[in-house]
Amino acid sequence: MDYIVLDMEWNQPWPGSPSARKVLPVQIRGEILQIGAVRITPEQQVADEFQVLIRPKYYRRLNRRVSKLTGIKEAQLREEGLPMVEAMERFRSWCGEDVTFLTWGFDDITILRENLRLYGMDESWVNRWFNAQMIFNAQTDGSTSQKSLKSAMEAFGIEASRPAHDALGDAYHTALICARLDLEKGTREYTQALQSHVEGFHGAELPGCLSRKVFYDYKDKRAALSAMAGSENKCPICSRQMLGSRWFAQPGHRYMDLAACPEHGKFLIRVRLSEQPEGLVRVSRLTYEATSEAAQAYARRVEKAEPEGKRPGSRRRRRSRLTENLE
Ligand SMILES: [Zn+2]
Image 1 (tube, rainbow, N blue to C red):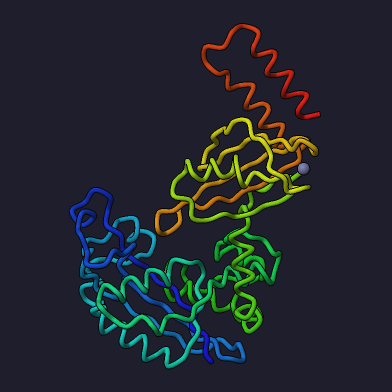
Image 2: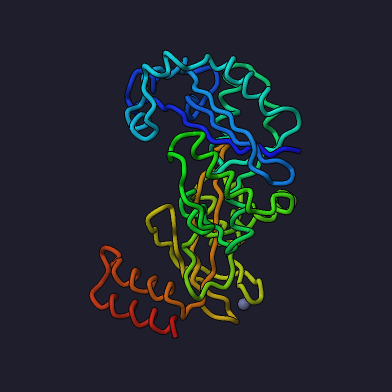
């Protein structure tokens, strides 16, 4: 079975422009302008290439940021761009039957499927796809962050030989990376790689971290935080429910709190909230030792956040209590 390394460039309406207010039959995050693809054989040889420009139908005015980044011009799309349906038919027939798609990131396949749906076209042929970043991480340093194409190329000592932010150029460089990975193993163990990405705190994890866990499907922020302070507030040692004190907000939908187990003492809890596709809330939760740097940062934060209307002297009390907590 061939692998198809896919990269696309797409257009988005300029915020506030008439296009941005258009209601499309299917919501899309971007309208595809260019498809670049490179085949990798089952023996992991980089093989033939495909490229097509597409004339946009819904967002015809080219976003100047997109134009600057990709070098694509409106006139060029009018002259050389194919209508979406024709471009897709060509692409599908070049791919052939029963292929596996590889992309750098999660966006390309999502946008491809949205665009196919917008035109009422079959999307079943793009069902089998993998984000090559996850395979790259699993087979290199095991990190959970999404690396840029450039840094992955550097890690493998691959020199750029094609233009960046050109669909075929990016697809070609991605293919060079993919050809050095064990794709058979990577796709077989993909679920696991994806899970470690999801569970990861994406580079924000600090020393002294004892555990991390991801929770899903809270109806809003309040429900999520209340579960984190209540039923899900478990001691990392004995799993008994801990008592929380007060959530402190941090930038990026993050919150922290100092929780206590009657037997094992204090732990710093850090959570990060993010929105799931259906509007529900997902929580990534980290538990730190109370002596960790992160917990000390919390203590400093609490000290600074002087609650209003406090009696004189409360500041000192608060500080001494926290110092005890950290010992
Ligand atoms: Zn405990």
